[in-house]
Amino acid sequence: MSADFTNMTLEEMRAVLAAELPSDAAFDGWTPTALKATSARMGVDADVAGLAFPDGALQMVEAWFAHVDRAMALACSPEKLATMKIRERITALVEARLHVLAPQREALRRAQSILANPRHAGAAARLGWHAADAMWRAAGDTATDYNHYTKRAILGSVYAATLLIFVNDDSEDWAETRAFLARRIEGIMRFEKAKAKWTGGGSRHFSMARFLGRLRYPAT
Image (tube, rainbow, N blue to C red):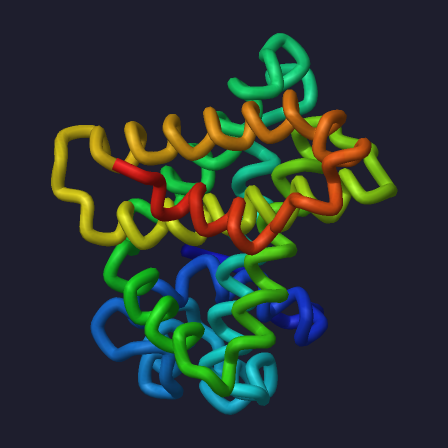
């Protein structure tokens, strides 16, 4: 890949490097070694590349996920999504992210290990929320009340669970992941249909934690 880094800000450089970093992170982890390999391959001074990621591994992962957000938006234009029902929009948006992540599943696995560290719980929650927010906004959601938060909390949980299946899915065309995702999105749609009831007189009996748990671990 050829890019002119001469006049780039560190933020712009970070975005360009983040798109290529997973190829090296798959082998060396999200480490300075991986960053040096990426910068050498792209013709960037290693010290300058280091300045773009002063906070290390977590910042590299965050930058990569931001790249996934941008790639998802390019793959799912508003015009394309406008022809779909809401269920189809959410499915298309999640699958667009999976297509971006698919060539770098080992890098994703290593990123998940970093985010699973209790010290990074806050960052993991923030990144999950951001991914869900990006998908709902792309799907045309404009809710600003209680609905805004429940939609993102549920989709964030579904997306995180889907990635755990996806990273180890060797089935053809990710059949297992797609089936898992379809079941979870069906759960989201049931929730949306029942929301009016739950936010009425029976809302005091509703437990968000219990509902999220059932989405991830449904009764058999």
